[in-house]
Image (cartoon, rainbow over the protein chains, first blue to last red):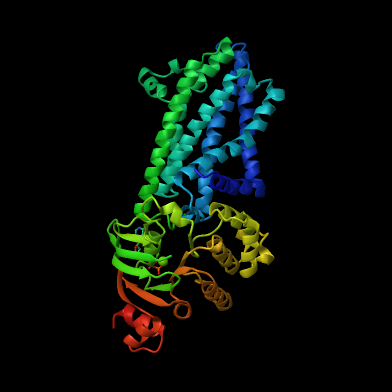
Length: 263
Length: 240
Ligand SMILES: Nc1ncnc2c1ncn2[C@@H]1O[C@H](COP(=O)(O)OP(=O)(O)OP(=O)(O)O)[C@@H](O)[C@H]1O
Ligand SMILES: [Mg+2]
């Protein structure tokens, strides 16, 4: 991998965000709205439910972490869509940059795009609702890394679909990916799901990560085993995502769609 | 760089776009790629760039196969411009050139950009967003991008399509000077016959995916008994 090429591609997206106020606003706006919405829901449940009794902010913390995952995958995918929209796609694929370097650049840059929105939103929650995601403690960093890897993986899969099927694939992609959300057990324990769905849910990293987050906040104990499990499953999916991306790229070379992908 | 195309063949689903063509481009020469719409010019260029995988046949650039592991190494010395690809609209001209300079590993980025901006007369709008330029200005920026790595093999797909005669002439004049001063091999696909006559040392003519004629412009004109390349093109394309 050539770091200066990875930097060059990242720079393209940094220039874009810096130059476009609407894009910046977009990055800041949605996470903040989420905080408000889930902040109030969280407050309501904390006062009125026995499950969440005395554990202010479990819901809001879950919402922030879930939004972090969601923003990561959108960020990843958006950067690729920008290349298609701007018809820069072909320029990129004929420059001497490897596919692995493109994936690396997008993965590294997506974190900036994500943090631009998530850091202010997470900080706002502290004075506004008295909820700090930092109360999860040092395990937070591992939760975030695992969620990020899985988020990027979803972005990678959607992007692979875009290369394979063209830009019209986008809607189907998001719809089918967020079909996974109910299985992530973000706001409720996995026992809510019927037995057969639990099997699928357990094969996703989200259950393990969110269950442990709730355990940390509600029982004040940390167990790194489920976090490790979530992390490893995420990594496995990421590897799979990279593989699918390569397949899509080689498929596009056969079909000739890299030279003038329509809009 | 020299290019050797052997038995190149491309079939998309059920359409044969390129039907077993052979040609060479010798080092530092300019080859014109002519032929009616849909005859397979862009597909051929796409295959030379390694963007389209040939169904059969081989492409050697300086003896290396673009479809093998040498692709990235070769791409550092190749570039491509065409009106149907663009640069990011929200970035300024300078930002775009900087990014591609970095991607191509250009050493002295500032100087290279200034030099090219000077040569292609981009200075007045180099700080402007690329999307805000006129199509003639955009076209020059695309050309600048394609020259940023001082390519040894330059592929041009209808570089002056949709330009007014004045800017078209400016670009042709620029390319004429450029190829005289630099060591560059050019493949030029074009529908503009006077452009081809002015720039190309030799031409090949495609029809329905096959190569139907080749030679210098004068050879072809003579062979078909016409007075210029335009009439010769019409004769070959219409098959009479
Ligand atoms: N990705 C693709 N999938 C299917 N068919 C394709 C694809 N790209 C090109 N074709 C077909 O292959 C043939 C050759 O197309 P190509 O774009 O190479 O022609 P061309 O000579 O560049 O034409 P023009 O002068 O109009 O640019 C056409 O019939 C075209 O419809
Ligand atoms: Mg074409």
